[in-house]
Length: 204
Image (cartoon, rainbow, N blue to C red):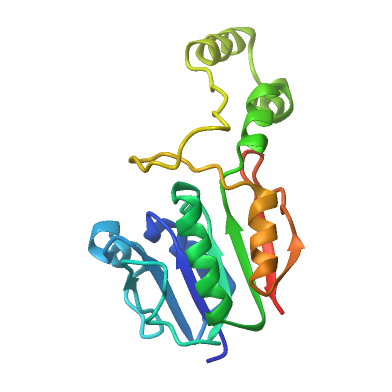
């Protein structure tokens, strides 16, 4: 198989549709804990003979052959998984990814998130729109920011699961664990998101 693309995401459909820019892989397998019907995957993507959608119940990825993955991408998903679950997937990826294959993993990092929250003048969309807003529009935006402010995330929170929550895995811990499982860190953070790290790694 020239390219295997495994993607852990929710909802799968919207993000999967954007992978068409990568070209057509010989096999593309989105992986999710939720069904394709729940995610409306086929409605977004359409059917194709090179796509097989897999539902998983654990982190073993037992349905995927070892040494078979050429490309892995996860964005906006594992930030909602506990540290134990994330590391379970990384262990499995160490067995499933080919030597030289590439991976991109987004995780939650409360240090980066809190820095973004504490410095809105550096990251707010207002910077891009500064010269295009009227005085009234700026007043409205300022009021909305005060009414619905972002708050810092608690670094010492527990690992108990609940719907929609994030888990503070952290960039350094993620990179260290990836390295311990046979991966080389290409970029600790690709800086494509002001709030969350996207780690670029390669299987040795």
